[in-house]
Length: 409
Ligand SMILES: [Zn+2]
Ligand SMILES: [Zn+2]
Image (tube, rainbow, N blue to C red; front, top):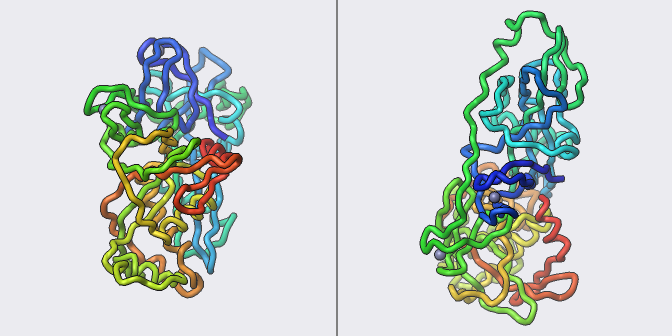
């Protein structure tokens, strides 16, 4: 479930709300569209029910995303949605439970005042915590683990002190006994860190036209000069993209990442022919495949783990030689909601899923290391067939509800 964050329009100051997975917003009052960025991760604060107190804030790391684990002869996956206390102070709730979903949060900017409890958990530590959750939910021994499309953020729980006790400022419940003097806290308390949000105008860097995108888009397109811009890393950088022509009456173009990559270790895969032989596909290798560099395909949109793997494997194994153009398509483009950097983390999973003899080859997965080459966004036409949309060139279908659900991941 997504969190809701209240904030103010950077242009006109009007109150607005957005969901955790949204980065682009259009102000309903001044109609200005902007993109939201931060240097590291987003920081939010839960609303305090009390005012006029010296506030202290306890950090919680927040992780939401798909975890994949290769073990024995299968790939297990799970959607993880958790918060973990990152302060060293004993007696704080281990997790925030459902609280962030039940109330609207605000951005934790440095002008808020008060002090924070030091964050003892690094990003790596948080991933270990996620790992221990996935390991207990899944197998302990595994050959490869990956997190795809995850959101990592910090949520602060407001606390205040009254007499000899720290109170939870959201519920007003007493939490931890503390000594009268402040000395006991100095080791674990910090000044409010300098953290700010950056808003960027959604203007095409090339022609100045207003860029197209949806609230959860990580790539924006220019309807004027027809270029695509990656908006996931604090600035707009151009993304190479192509269109596979097609389109009947009701068509939508779904985006996929095509990533050139090869491995020289563990399993040697430098060409498409080597990929087919190594994974032991029931296909006769054609001579020209020896010359084809290996490309992996993944959806460029968030979708449930088993669909993500299924689509990636199907397109990677078949390595369709699509005719591609740079012409403006006649039908709408589905938003790109999975950044390329996340797609690149899925290569070993796609390989693992494609391997026919998993039991024999999975033990080599830890040694496999891909060198990533060029990448490209490719839009493929899918035709509306009622409940499903079907790819025009291959019998690949996606349920419309599946796409819809993916927007909330
Ligand atoms: Zn505004
Ligand atoms: Zn432009």
